[in-house]
Image (tube, rainbow, N blue to C red):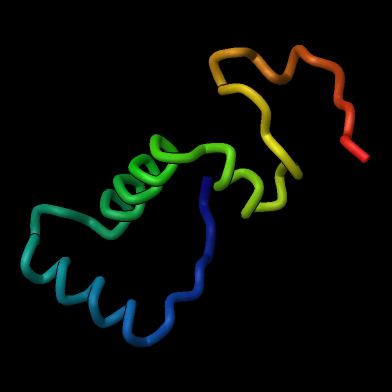
Length: 73
């Protein structure tokens, strides 16, 4: 997957500084690491933030794609 993202100037500078201090790390690797860390902490909140689901119930291990899609009212 390829995506274009916006970084505010202060965050962009912080990322550039980090990558200069860690030349063995690419921007792609840094973003992947950050996303993996965030997803491990609270996947339901990230999905809700992304607008993928209103409220995620259960975990990805429960194969949510096999459950009927019902929205709470």
